[in-house]
Image (cartoon, rainbow, N blue to C red; front, side, top):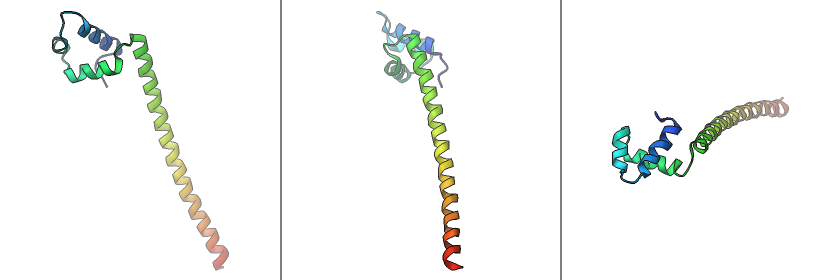
Amino acid sequence: MSRYPIDKIIQILGEGRLPGSSVASVCRKYGITQATYYRWKKKYGGMGADEARRLKVLEEENMRLKRLLAEKELELQVLRGHLSRILCKCIYSFFCV
């Protein structure tokens, strides 16, 4: 989680593109590493603030859906385990009684 909101990240990236400013000076100004700057540039470069916000919302929704899917798969696995035990008991009682 970034301590900077999306709008600020876009602003920082814009400052880094200005003529006469270096990436190193922008990074020092905001207390970020150059790796962070370039990671942000890779992710948000060329986007406007609205597009970047939309991307963040979609990423959060995607994470929520992945978590939900994992929970449902776990529930399904538990139900399959219960079903197999029940079937084994039924088969055993049918053939052994």
